[in-house]
Amino acid sequence: MAQVVPANQKWWAGGRSPFNVEYGKLMMWYFLMSDAFTFGAFLISYGTIRFSSNSWPDPNFVFRSFPGIGEMNIPLAFVSLMTFILIMSSVTMVLAVAAGHSKDRKGVIKWMLWTIVGGIAFLGCQAWEWTHLYHQGAWWGSNPFPNIDGTPSTTNFTNFFFTITGFHGFHVFSGVVINIIMLIMTMRGVFDRRGHYLMIEKAGLYWHFVDLVWVFVFTCFYLL
Amino acid sequence: MEKMHTTGGAAAHAEEHSFDKKAIWRTFWILLIITVVELALAILEFETGFPPKFILNGIFAILTLAKAFYIIAEFMHLRHEIKNMIMTIALPALLFIWFIIAFLWDGDSYKNLRNRYDRYHKESTQPQKAPDGKETQKPGELH
Image (cartoon, each protein chain N blue to C red):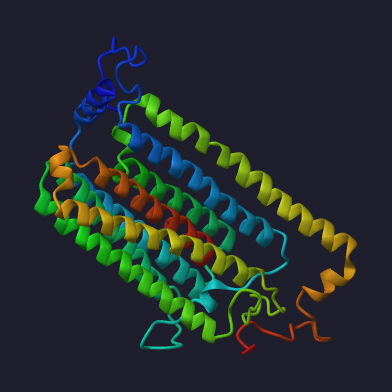
């Protein structure tokens, strides 16, 4: 449901943003667009290689560990925890944006803090997962996991896994850094002096995009 | 310069739609439930072999798109922007339809061509059959 606007509204007559959003926010959308195609290219090349292979490792077998309980046969449990953390931090980010809308500085600070905590927790989980896989012998150029039909596998699986989750993890990391900068700016009252909290919205768009990409990474690597 | 500042301010105020806390939490529950359903299906398939993998993959693709829709529409607030703005994001994204179909098709075609013309590749990447017709290696046995 798009915004309700008067029928005779002249969006392109000049003097205002024809898309009814602030310039920086619009450019953030276009940046995310291009970033979506970068991630899309990665994931689709992964798909192409997987479609061109006679067999592929079984994610239920590869991702079956959980910290503290070790090699239990609980497929996907740990990655669901990571997914939950990221969805939760997306929610706290929207709440920060909503608080910014009503110029509630305390609210913004509280929800930004929670968002940063969520981001760091996600990165921690990913660090554990990578370390665990590394100790099992998986890395770029090395794949200890056999294909699901028992045939020897190539290193395509691990190469794509570490490249794509690494690229995503780097986005999470930069998102956390951006959020920390926004938190400091909020605490110093920059946005109150400016009169609006649009910067929080732009950081929010980036953070939700990171969550969005994870939805696809999760499906492509862990479910399919 | 002064003109641009007032314009930016007007745009900021023009976004009348305020964030509805109820809608945020409803979106959260939808995302969480979809994820739980995905996991339940994945584990069900892992334990029982049902539903068949190709049907399951279709279900996963649909559920993933549903999650993507809710994140973009509600969390990123795109649903509440004006239509022209939505279209500049939505129309270029349609390229993904061609992008995905073309490249997955290409990968599949490469697999088929290679299996047909490279017998060594085909034999070395397919399960070895023992004389009694059983596979000599089972996935669980390696390791």
